[in-house]
Length: 112
Image 1 (cartoon, rainbow, N blue to C red):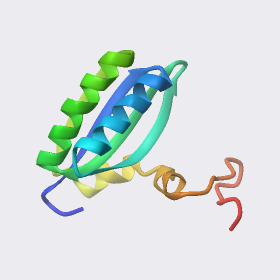
Image 2: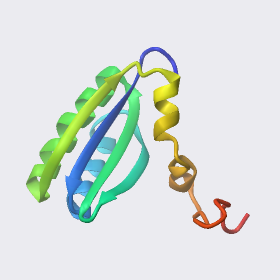
Image 3: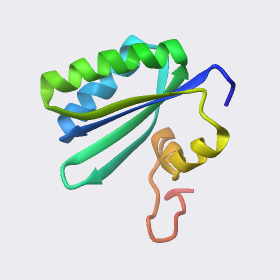
Image 4: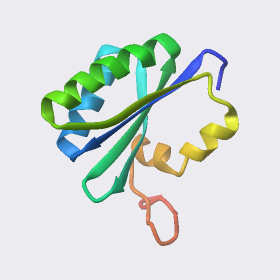
């Protein structure tokens, strides 16, 4: 990841609030949603990537939308993350978001 790139994370209670947050983030800033994860029962998290300024703007919009539709548990920005940090986030979700689904047992993409 280039030095000017950044990661933003939001964690919400409820999928509706998370969806509203993601929608607001990708519509108001030049960011890509790179991960969505169920954290625990009823709690979900999403990660976006983009420039530092774009992620900052996306998190502001996303947190407002989440609060309108549900409960914001946390929001955090990681400017210029180290490549090792990115590896922690990359659990196969990037491919799933790009299209298709994964067979959880084998880790292979269905339909490939």
